[in-house]
Structure formats: structure tokens, C-alpha cells
Length: 178
Image (cartoon, rainbow, N blue to C red; front, side, top):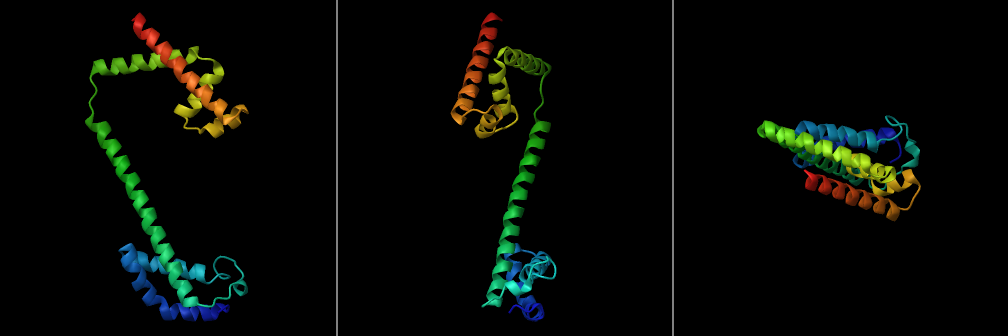
């Protein structure tokens, strides 16, 4: 089954059944047709994606074609579920931001807290401050921080932990003074 013309003929014979197979998985006949077309591109290398059609001789081409369709359909379902989760999170965050009204007093407290944290960060040792900012603000992993400073992961963890302790102490002392 290495001849592209034979693959095309086989695909055309089974195309309607493949669409019927994919439609219940994705829940949409139009999407199922798109998936079947993508499956043909993967099934018939050498034409659309530049592969060598002679290198893929199949023993069970129909089963292989169905497997491609099935995998593409499930991939689409998973991808769509992930997109919906993120859409829901974005909507929820937006609604939350709109629904929470902040009083002027709360806004002043928030700004004063931000200033206190900024001042406390400025008092930290530079390496501790950078490691803490990389981890907590920029979301860097311990491995990335260790690579940046050319230290071990354990040492990067100690830098961050030490920075948190120093920051906490500085903020606690500031609260006691106020």
C-alpha cells in the first residue's frame, strides 16, 4: 500500500465512514470532515508534507487510517476542553475583578503594603532579592534560577527561603514600628 494513488482510492472509499466514525467523538460533522482531511494528509505522505511515500508500506492501511482519525479526533477534543477551561478562568477572573469594589481605604492600604514590600525587597541581599523575584514574580523554576546563578538547585532553594525569611522579618519589624 505504498502507492499514493492506491492510498487515495482507499481513502475515497472509506471517507464517508471515517466522517461517521469521527463525528460522535468531536460532536460536529463539519469538524469531523476537517479531521478526516487532516488524517488523509498524514496517511498519504509524499504529497502534502514532503515525505517519502515508498518508506511507509502498510499491512493494514484501513485500520491505520481509522487510528489516525481516532487520534486526531481525541486530540481535538482534549485541546478544545483545555481551551474551554482557560476561557472559563479568564471569564471568572474578569467577572471577579468587576464584582469586587475596593473602598478608598482598602486602596490606600494596598498601596502602602506595596510600598512596604518594595522597601523590604530593596533591603535584601542582591542575590537573595534576585532569586526571590525570579521565583515569586517571574515564575522561574529552581532549576532555572540555579542555572542563572551557576549554583546547585538546593542552594537556589536556600537563597529563596532566606529571602522570604528576611522579607518577612523586615515587614514584621515595620508593622511593630507603626
